[in-house]
Image (cartoon, rainbow, N blue to C red):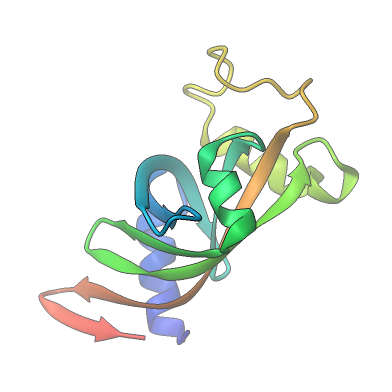
Length: 136
């Protein structure tokens, strides 16, 4: 990904952002859901539970489609594991800060070891800026 695209993605999505994430189940049926995510260095990050359909699908096929605010593309999704793992500390702090308005509303249970960080590394996409299409 080039610096121009990275800057556009950072400007739009480095804060709490709603993006759609599409997966495919083992029968080839597509599923899509909206998640809160932030963009950091070529990837989107969100917090989820390891038992969700989204994670079941990703374990079978890590290729996902993503879209949000004049952007669509594909990525490779992977679990970074339990949010409280030491190696997740810095990223988890960024996510808590970005999601502060709703984070403690009872939806996220950090005491549950199945509460994980999901990383979606962008592989390709299309983004629009100032009326121009940029393929990457």
